[in-house]
Length: 203
Image (tube, rainbow, N blue to C red; front, side):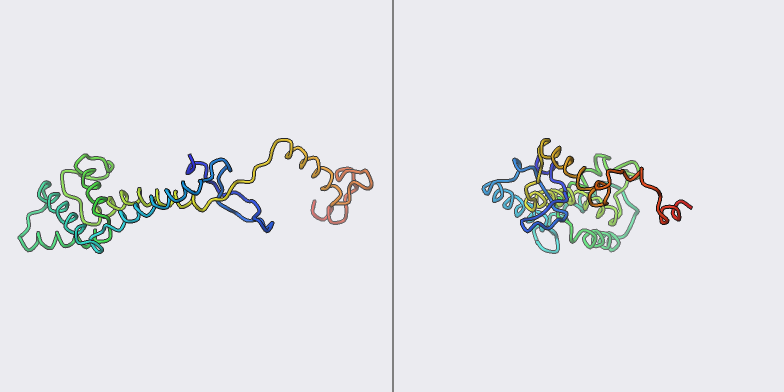
């Protein structure tokens, strides 16, 4: 609910300066306890995002196992033992900065023919393809982190009652004509004779 209603609004800050700001309805602003819970949740998700082969030996082993099983399960071009080893290294290079669980989810999706009709699921994906699919899985968690951070950065949305809006419209109806010097004469802008500038513009 909070994520869905977190929007950018043009409103003033405590100093009266107007700017674009992330906002939430006042009744949906997180409490201090809620904020601490959200911060802990972000920290946990960010730890998941750091579980990559280049940062974690356990993650590297898990990724290697996932890739090995994929290459054993699906056929690929015949190659020598040296070629197979080089192919495995290519996958590890492609996936070194991708969380191991994201790679596992991408491979599961490949087995299930769920990454779109543009792929041929009879064969193992190329390293670059598996990287792209794995990143999509990782971005799901990354997007969740970004959404929660937006909620934490939001400020209460300034909302006006219908009565206040009606008063402001009434005030503007008076102030705008005065600003253009139209109310003193009692003549509307449309009733005034065209000026030289108006005639020039109409040409």
